Image (cartoon, rainbow, N blue to C red; front, side):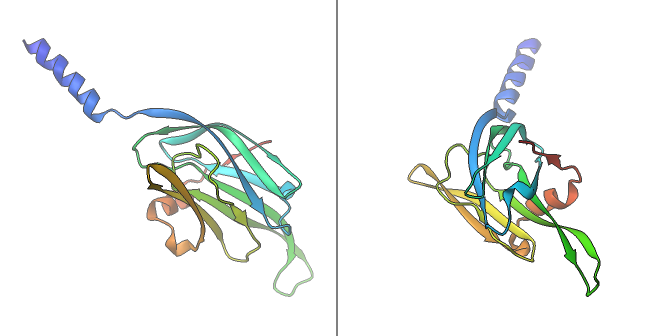
Length: 178
């Protein structure tokens, strides 16, 4: 009887507390203003604990877009999001009235509040030139049993605490190669 109770407890615990993990193919594109040449960008991503990229590649096109495709793994219901993608543009600028050029990096952040991009999101993700930190957030809501994505530029002070913690506390960025 004691063994039966232990077995039932184990089965109930696995059923009640188990989480399902899934791998998803993703494919999406990001467009940049013509003043930001995509061939000059370095691209990185930051993983969330329970959502990671298992493979990722990208290509560019003549419309100044980057098309990503790959596979990510996520744990359903864990409240985790697709990894943040960071675009870095190296520039040489003259600063503070000197004649010396200084190497600078302008950063563009693609932040997701969805576990993966399962299909074409139906919205354009478009980065323009800006002197301030640039964050584009992709989220979604359910309407009539259909996932509807929304894409918006957000200021730093409107990012969730969870996303800010990932961006600022994770000192490991993974470089994405073609």
